[in-house]
Amino acid sequence: MEETCDVVIVGSRLAGAAAAVPFARAGRRVVVLDRSRFPSNQLSTHLLFPSGVHEIQKIGALDAILANDPVKSPWVSIQIGDDLELSERWRPSGDIDYCLCVNRLIQDMELVNAARRAGAEVREKSRVVKMLWRGGRAAGVRYADAEGNEHNLYAKLVVGADGRRSTIAQEVGSFRPYRASRNGRGLIFRYGKDPLVNTRAGETIFQWWEGDSLSFMFPSVPRGTALILFMGASEEVERAKVDPEGYWAEKLKRHPRMAKRLEGVTDMTPLMSTNTTSSFFRASSGPGWALAGDAGHFKDPVIGQGQRDAMWSGRVLAETVAGVLDDPAELDQALRRWEQKRDKECLASYHFGNLETRVEAVPPVLAEIVRLNSKGVKPDLSDLYGRARSMPQVLSLPRLTVGLTSALVHNDSDQSNRELIAAAVRDLKVHLGVRRELRRQRFRNPIPLTGSEHGNAEPPAYRAPAPVRPAPAAESATPVQAETNAQKPSAPEAQKTPEKHEVNV
Image (cartoon, rainbow, N blue to C red):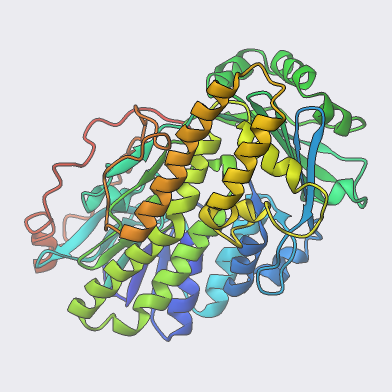
C-alpha cells in the first residue's frame, strides 16, 4: 500500500508535534507516525520554564493543558548549604511568566490533539520499518500499522522526532554522535501529595545543594501533587534500586532543608530512576531528512531544558523549510541553515548542563555570585534555567571576576586560596571556550571542550524495530522499493551492536 504526502514526521511528542503544527498551518500535508497509543507516559523531568510554556502556547496546546488546573510557578528558590538562598521571579517569555510541571500523559496527549487541530494526520501504533530512498535522497518511510500491515509513505521531507534511540537517525547513518559528554548524575524521583499547595512554597520551584548532592521539588499535576527529585552521582541509581526507602532516608538526612519542606507530604509513589543521560550532538540534516528534538541533540537533564529545546527545534525547523519543500536543492540548504541555528541556540546550555552534571559542590565563585545577588527578587541568575539569556550573558566575565574576588576575600572553606584559584581558572577556561565556539560557529564541530565535555560518553543504544509479519505474497515491489537499499547512503559510523540502556528522559 502506497501513499504520498509533503512531510512525514516520525514521533508525535514534543519535537514532532511542534513541527507538525506549523507545517500544517502552512498548508502542507503532514502525516505523523508514532509507535505509541495516546495517552502514553514518558520518563521525563516534566518541568517547563516560561520559554517552554511559551512553546506550548505557540503549538496551540496551552489552553487545554491549563484546563487540568496545574500550578503556575512564578518563583524559583536556589538554596546552597545552610546560609545561601536565592529567590527570584521568572523572566517572562512572551506573556508567560511561570513554570509548569505537567505529567506527560496529559501534556503529550494535548500536543497530539493540537497537531490534529492544525490539520496534521497523526497515526498511532505506527512503527517505522525502514527508510525509502530515491537518487540518494530520503523519499519516505515504510511503516507497519497497528495490525502489522506495511505501507510505503512517500514524502518530500522525512523528520525524525523519535527520541535519543531514533530509528531515523540509524537509517540515515547519523546515529553515532559527532560530539558527546558523559553524564555524572543520575535521576531518582517520586511523587507525593503536598499539603502546601496554594501557598507561595507550593508555587515555588526549589533547588537544594548540599555539598555535591543536588535535589529539586516542583508542583505537579493534579493540583496538590509534587515531583521530588534527587540528582546525586549516577552510581546512586543502582543503590536506589536495591533499597529504595533506605536510599531515600539516607538522602533526606543529607538534605535537611529539603526534608523540612517535605514535612506533611504523603502518598509517596515508588521511586523511578535513570542514569543514562549522556549529552550529544548528531549530524541532524541531509538530503530530504532532518532530526529534531532529542533525535538530533540531547543535553543533561540536570538543567531541565530538554523539553523546551525539543519543541523549539521542531517549530523552527518547520518555519524554516515549509516554503521550500518543492525544491530539493533549496530544501537541503534550508535544512543545513536550520541545523546551524539549532546548534547556536543550544550550544551554551549544552555546556552549562555538562558543568552542572559534575558531581562536585557548587563552585565557590558561583556561590559568591549567588550571595551577591540574593537580596532582590527580579529575574537575574534564574535566566540560566529560564533561557531568557544565555550562560555567557548571565555569567559575564566581569561578574565572574567579581565572584572570584569575593570568594577569595570570604574564603572559609577547606580549600586554600591557591586551590580556589585553580578551580576558578579551570571553569573560566570553559566559559571562554563557549564564547569562542559561539563566535567561530564551526558547523558540526567535533572538537571537545576541555572541562565541559567528559570522556567515555555512553550514547544511547539503537533498538531495532521489532519484526512485523511479512506482506501478502501477491503484493509486488515498486521501483522505489527496489532501490530502497541500493541507493541508501553508506553509514560506516552507524552503531552496529546495540547495548541495553534505560528509557528515554
